[in-house]
Length: 214
Length: 214
DNA sequence: CTTTTTATAGATCATGCGATCAACAAGGGT
DNA sequence: ACCCTTGTTGATCGCATGATCTATAAAAAG
Image 1: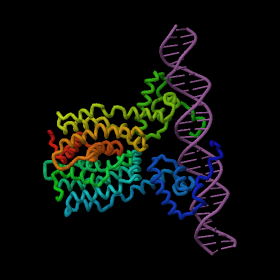
Image 2 (image 1 turned 60 degrees about the horizontal axis):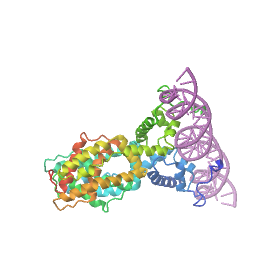
Image 3 (image 1 turned 120 degrees about the vertical axis):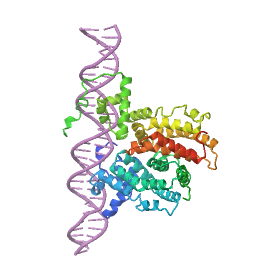
Image 4 (image 1 turned 120 degrees about the horizontal axis):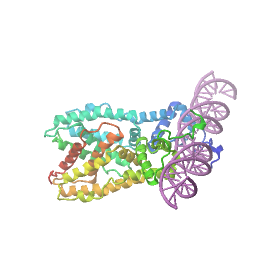
């Protein structure tokens, strides 16, 4: 070890002979593995390790992405894509359904999408790095999810407590924190996350005097 | 630029002449700046940049810390230290004070301690890195804060809702998420965090039928 | 089968990083 | 004023990393 002549030795000695894939397929494969990889080790993870995981050489990565930042951009896009279905604003404001049922439906499905190791960690890494996509996502979330929930709550509140956007953030944060606990901090999560979510929603509704069937 | 002879050029050309400090003082100065530095750029921030901020040479850092990991350990200790005052278990279980007042006192003071950029970000960075201190801190938190709160809530719950530890995590997460929003994601925080905290506590207590004065 | 195309590998470069060490100088003791 | 300890510097080492370039071979085209 330490032999300078070892630098360029083969990095994919396991799989077998060189396998040639159509560019589109290879690219997708790289991005998919990169998501898992960077989610694990952080955005500073090095390209050689990633290549090793893929069973290809490091130089190949640069045939598909001019720079590592380009690869990270692709990772972001892959991860951020389709987490917020465009029909949620509509469904959240459908007053033919009780608000509790709407919130429950949203947070059940949303949590199923985001309580995933790769998403949680890359979201956090990119947030810490100040990535633009992160800001955009959260602003989008505020606009299409939190604000509608606030409006629906305002419309149904029966007691003196007037809801503010911070109340929605509190509901949202309490739920999202389940994923943070488990995937960022590595603590054991709840046995039944959906039950915990339901109770969070019930606390929220109760505070504003909103009946479960309303 | 690119001249290989530039590598070793002075890295502290601003302040003036070489200032000689007692080791203890210098060490503290390094740790303090390192906290701010690593909180900003992440734990992979390089020692040369840190040294530049301090106005000393990079090599000096290694006179005080044998390795960069040692420095990071010192940063962890500095940051994690004294965030959980040892008298909180006692104060949280003092039944001569209404539970609401106890929770309010705790989370007001606790949030004042942790809603700080350096803490929030280093806690998150170290959590993502799987640092042992992070786990220990959270387990400690669970033991000396969350469990007592659960016991107190159980003792006072008047309706059918039986509290579980996940309810406390939900309360806690909803509050901590305020700090995450502002310091990790860089979003504007609430105008009055204490008010938001009070409302979170009220939602929590109401759900278990606990009167504010109980 | 032969030719052409291009996905892939292997080697290498330039730079940046953590870490080391000899030389220097600031401050205290005498 | 002098020495002597040691905090501090400047230069350098070894290695890892992002990126580049050329040779190779796998699949497609004829």
